[in-house]
Length: 484
Image 1 (cartoon, helix red, strand yellow):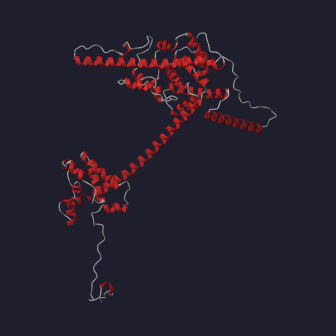
Image 2 (cartoon, rainbow, N blue to C red):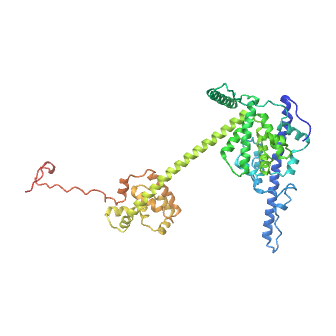
Image 3 (cartoon, rainbow, N blue to C red):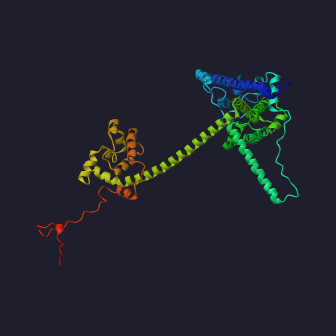
């Protein structure tokens, strides 16, 4: 701890707030330096390994273990800094390994407001990125800073406790009156909550009791998140509720929360800080969470509560819209896949029924006009050509193939043939052309049955000719001949 503290009134938090802003900047820079130091160490190890392999010496130098690397920060660390978490510090350090100019330009560009925490943040800060020695060096420049943090984290001034709802219990009240009183209390509580939500939406000021209630509701979610992290679970809904409660905190409570996490981060907390947060003795997981929250809260402290709430709601609405659109897309893809599967089954049925007919036409058997047409169209020749012969077709001839003059029956058989294994890549454009020509509408059962038979096979036989037994008079006008 240490002496010193802020003044009272509106200026009471000015100096501690400036301290908190400086600490946020120092931590982000320190994590960035740690990230780059780790990156240079890994690059040095890779170069050393490449040199050892290229030399082909029988005894190569021993590989440098992460635990013995000079880039290890902090003599009291349990193990070497793990590269995976550092490689993911994207909120506070540059992600590019090669383009420093792009990093500088990105640093100068206005950064969008980052609200709440994400699953990636949890992976990055599963444990503290900076060891304790580096944290203390970065944060505790002098005792006055710690005193300012304690002032924000554990307000010592007396505050009126939120008055709890008191239900009168008297022998003079009958059970109906008690039930009515409870219903009225619940309605009043609901109205207060609606009024509070309306004020939060419109930027109205809440009373001290309302602000304290918002904080206590958030602390319940905080404890649930810490418990979930300690169990290794992840629940998106809980994180959304946590982030939603975080942006609703008052400016004073946001600074208090920031200071509490900072004290936990540098291990300068006391029982009052833990009691205020309602948590037990912090473990490594909690310290990593505190590291992450100091970064997140440092980005939010200069944003008014109304701006934070509106930005969070906009982000949530965008996420919900994207989820709905993704669901609709999956449903459309599912429907199209079902239609495509039905089309494939129909095409296979037609192709199997027509194999002998195509072979007969290629051998010159059948109707003379059909044989002539079959031989004249190179597209139909694909139905009886071997895979090797199809592979020999030149790209020029593939580009000249089209669907003009082909029946639906022939197109479906061609689609089955071109979908068999071993077809050349030049056939893809012709295949796409056939799919576009057929469309997604499935034929009726009667149409499928007709396409499973050779052309003309399903036509009814022509009617028998009418005998003309009375010359000079049209046959249609004569009475039918009667034979005895």
